[in-house]
Amino acid sequence: MAVYQALLEPGDTVLGLRLDQGGHLTHGSPVNASGILYRFVSYGVTPSDERIDFDQVRDLALEHRPKMIVAGATAYPRTIDSEPFRQIADEVGALFMFDAAHIAGLVAGGVHPSPVPHADIVTLTTHKTLRGPRGGCILCRAEHAEKIDKSVFPGMQGGPLDHVIAAKAVAFREAAQPWFGEYARRIVENASALAETLAGTGLRLVSGGTDNHLMLVDMRSFDPDVSGKKARLALDRAGISLNENTVPDDPRPPYITSGLRIGTPAVTTQGMGPREMREIGSLIHRTLVGREDESEIAAIRDEVLALCSKFPPY
Ligand SMILES: *Cc1c(COP(=O)(O)O)cnc(C)c1O
View 1 (cartoon, protein in one colour):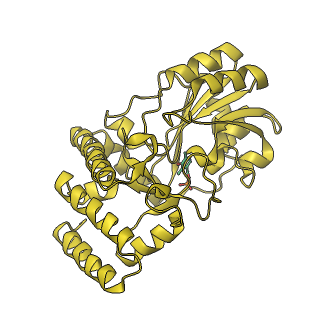
View 2 (view 1 turned 90 degrees about the vertical axis):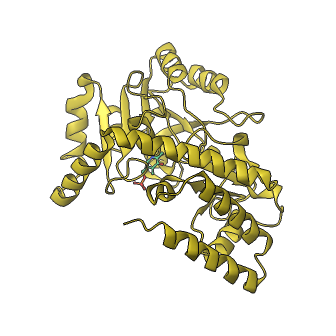
């Protein structure tokens, strides 16, 4: 919001990724301040490979002449290449903002290409893969710095929370250590192992797999009558925490959905590796199959507890 307020006027046109295709509420959802204040036009993924459709991004940019193009996602399992966004933004004279909220830790760890060389503004959260306290961060070209600073304060923010600033400093220092790169590499390795296990049970993964820290399971491939929410509630009972999430062109609303979103950063921090990912994948599949059998759910819950007690987070 601080970036939008600094560089846009209310009513300005912005391009962003559609919510059901992996985009974030702050990328123009009609129920979010972004969609209320600005005129967002949404691009999506291709139906064939479920990767960002750059032909569509370019066509929409030429048609709508946005003042800003926003890249970045909250549920997209693939690498986001920022170069084509830069080229399209240059072609139509738009600013290019990359919202790296999810992947900031992967970028810091060197396992996802950095958007910094290509974007005018990069935003990130400090509490996702960067593994720090809840908060946000804005990087920008020097020419925008004064406007961004003013937009943050006095534009948006009141008094600072000094303890959270201290925690951010710790998170940034950790992310700058060589071992953080190893952590990031293991997150991605674990995500691949989990994705392979789930695909091996017959579940369809959006885009066929993952390049990053997360994957999306299309529950319609398991049973068209089991929504993402139904599956999530069963997994909750088995002690497996994840969230329901839309899949591209989801016929169900965002609070029910047809998909599951699963990430590996937390279990990687606990010290789990590919062997445990295979175990988790099989526990997830068993829960989906046995979702109406309370004794099976209780048995899975015991196995989850046994696994977690071997990997205490602290
Ligand atoms: C998580 C996220 C944000 C920030 O949302 P919070 O609710 O503050 O965590 C912004 N953009 C994207 C793409 C995100 O995934």
